Image 1 (cartoon, rainbow, N blue to C red):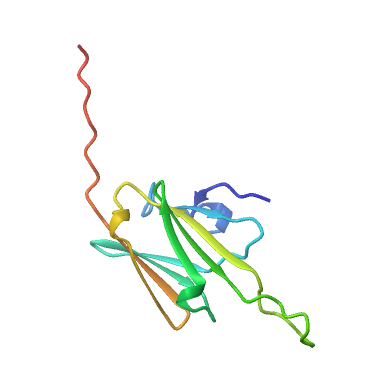
Image 2: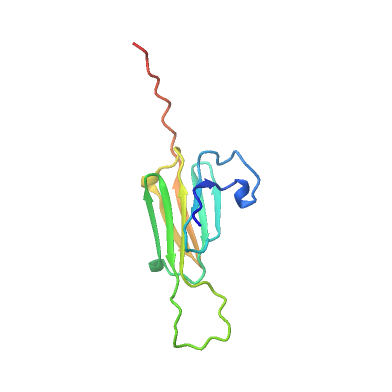
Length: 137
């Protein structure tokens, strides 16, 4: 089932509605992937996204921004058929999370770091351009 972008603070996620991120983040869950846990924090000059990716290395994770949508993808190990598991509870497959950025985000200066299985993405803020007034002639 495909979930189209919804607000992170919509009832879809059982979070209370908040105006803090109004028109900033919109979220999309990919088909055939598990949802990674994602925290969003705001500071005076930037937004910070923290994604839980336990057991991943930097080489397993890709971050892309296209048309004002930030996408995080991570692939886990494949199931080894020759091993005899008595129990297998860890997720095997792909994590993917897409988040729409607002007008006050500077997509050209996004940085990322990863430590102890937590990916931190820093999105600097910019002043949105004022609305352009059009004069009727």
